[in-house]
Structures are given as structure tokens and as C-alpha cells.
Image (cartoon, rainbow, N blue to C red; front, side, top):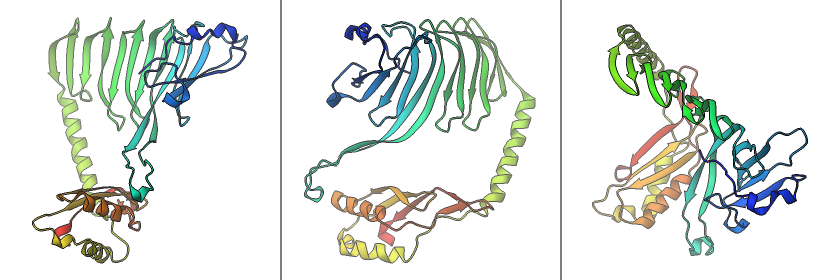
Length: 318
């Protein structure tokens, strides 16, 4: 997590009296910059008579929230109050100034996901109380307890399915007492932050083995209903025709493999081609798959729920 600290004070916020919202563009190091060099921007909200803190929000240039919080002081140097952090995942593709693109740079860097990352509270510039960290599906990943920026108190860590993975207590920044590891399978005792004993919990071990067998049986029962994604029309004939037009068979001793994902809506994505020395042909093959009509999506379970499938072809044998 990255905090926005004091750099506004040098611009003299006092002159505005916080009667209006302030907006500044920031570069990748979170320094004030002009809009041409900016990677994000920050808004400091006008302070009303009822406000006890200076509220701010930082956004990406696509107006996606990165962090929201507040400061105790006018210099914006002392975080104080609740903070919420977000992660923006991006897709980057390097383009080229080619004739096919009318000599336009097709490089892009676009957001493809916006996720809650963490939230907690500052008190006079120090992390205090519970801080929660999240997986991309917004289930809790980790819960930490702080006292004046130091881990002190309960600590819990979870698997993405929500089950408890690790739990225990910190005392003055180090592990203390009995910790439960792997969902309670092991009990580890700490003194002054050092492990002094480890014990296997046989009851938990037996329960986990039972749960594992039941889960495997459930997978076995439902997988018999699974149907893999499949193309519409005569896809293989279309592919053979395309490869013939591109003189694919003239390439001796090369065996190309193409893999791609069929999403829940049947659309093909993320094609990759390996095994070819001709990079131009590789790009044409990828383009063919990207332009292919959506497939019938794969389904899983007795209720035939659409699911993502990973498909691979060996082109030499088509």
C-alpha cells in the first residue's frame, strides 16, 4: 500500500481556504506533474465547518479509484481516519507503426480489472486496529491487528475459498503463543517470535482427510456431466483452408501448437502460437483465432453451468 503524503503544502493550500475542491495531476512517483506526464490525479475535498479531517481521493486517469482517505493536518502529512485501497490490473500491448495500422501507434495500456485491495484505519499517522486485505474476488485474504504501526493482537489468514489457513496472535510485532497452521492441522508455539514447539492435531487431520475424500467424490460425480467447448460450423475445414492459403504445409519439420481460452460466453481469447520460426505466420494464425465465430461454451455439472475451457491444437495434424 502506498500513502499519499505531503506535497500539497508547498503549493499553499491556505490560500484556497478549502472553500473549493482541489485537483492535482500526479506522475508515477506521486509527485505533482502536468497532465501530459500524469498517471493519476488526486482530489482534496473542500473542508466544511463540520469536518475534522481533510478528505482526499486518488484516481487513475480512467477515473478508477485508487485510494480514499483523510488527513489530520492541512499539510496532508498525517493520515487519520479510514482508508480504502484498490488495485487496477491492466492489459498492455505494444503496437507498431505499420502500414496495416495506417502508421498509427497501436500500443495500449488499458484497465481490465478494478479490485478492492485493503482497508483499515489510521490514528495520528499510525495504523491502528484491524486491517483487512482481500483477494480479487473480494473474499478476505488476511486480517491484521495494529497498535501504533506495530502488529499487536489477532492475526488471521485465509484461503481464497474462505477457509481459515493460519491464525494466532502478535505481541509487540512478533508471533506469540499458540498458532494454528493449515486450518488447525498443526499447532505451533512461539516465544519471543521464535518457534519452540510444533504439534500435529490428529482430529483435524482425520477431518481434513474425510473432507478431501468427500470433495473428490463430488468432483467425480459432477465431472461426468462436463462438456468441453466446441466450435460452431466446420471449424477444422475453415482452419485447413486458411493454413493452405498461407502455405503452412510448405514449412518443413515444424509442428505448431496453438492454445487459447474459450470463455463462458463462447468467445475465444488469449491465443498463443509456439513451434514456428515464421513470426508473421504466427501473428496471422493468432488473428485467425481471434476473428473466429464464438464457440459453444463448455459446461460443468448437472445444471450445465457455462465454464472456461483451455483448448490446444497441434496444427501439423489438422
